[in-house]
Length: 273
Ligand code: KMH
Ligand code: ZN
Image (cartoon, rainbow, N blue to C red; front, side, top):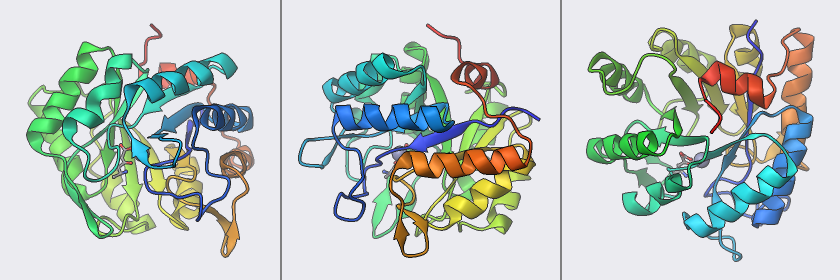
């Protein structure tokens, strides 16, 4: 079976230190957490920047510092967020892509997001794709609801993006979007673009259940404090790496090898710069 790519979504835009005391916030903390996750089996790190006070920002200078500090520690693939936080402008969100990270996320539509709306207009989405192409950045298409996968299939049909390589992240369990259930995952998988690779990012308790399900199904798994702060019911995780290590153990039980960063690059069609 294809080696398993584990993505560690370390920080996110919404998780707070108050809720999760081990949340990495500064570039040094993020780089250290990335190295720990790499050592525990992750081959991609999904990154959001924060200001020193913990608030979310897409400031390219902070992202540049994070990338440099991660690079100094390990060879993990750095995937920047273009989702940022709700309420940010499209211009703010896309700005760090000019740093030419290996990957960046591209959300495929608008959706309710808790009490907010995560806005992604068709024009902004096409602009994000164009900027990523211009800078040699591999997109990860973020799918929060089924219409977003329909849009991605339409893009492929119209030649806006190629059918391969094509990597999607099925983010399941956001309040306002698709449920974090096996039924929702199977429903989306039936409509996956032919040849696409996929990761599942379950929110909250679905992080474990859907991650565990993806391993025998041949998918890939995202874990981390962006999506879930607990190790078990009522028990906070002690680190992002603890969540990565659990998926690595489950993969070993399924005799599914873990992808090294270079194997992940080959699977995802990323050509090192
Ligand atoms: N913070 C969410 C509103 C991404 O990273 O691309 C969007 C998000 C998606 O986190
Ligand atoms: Zn994110």
